[in-house]
Length: 128
Image (tube, rainbow, N blue to C red):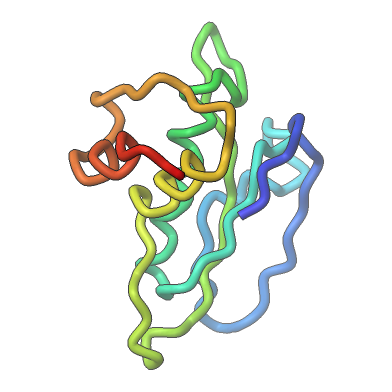
């Protein structure tokens, strides 16, 4: 995962016959979006694409994202590695969100409307 201090210009090259990609079409030159707030590279094959949702939730909680008519949508494209044959644990939005909150001093207030109960329980645990 890469989170940028401020939105950054990004591009991607898609290779292979079955790319597991999330929101990468937004990076095409003819699209409205010119900058991204972060980028996620995960494991878990197509299941790992959900990890970007955790980053989006965090960025939304701190007020980041593409502004359109008063609403903000964090732009977080992602790609996932094919590793189903390695018996990998599939990362999800909750696991990445918990990791972000555990590693940052800028913790936003928790909003239960955007998180599942497991993510809330993990995020509320005190860190040492």
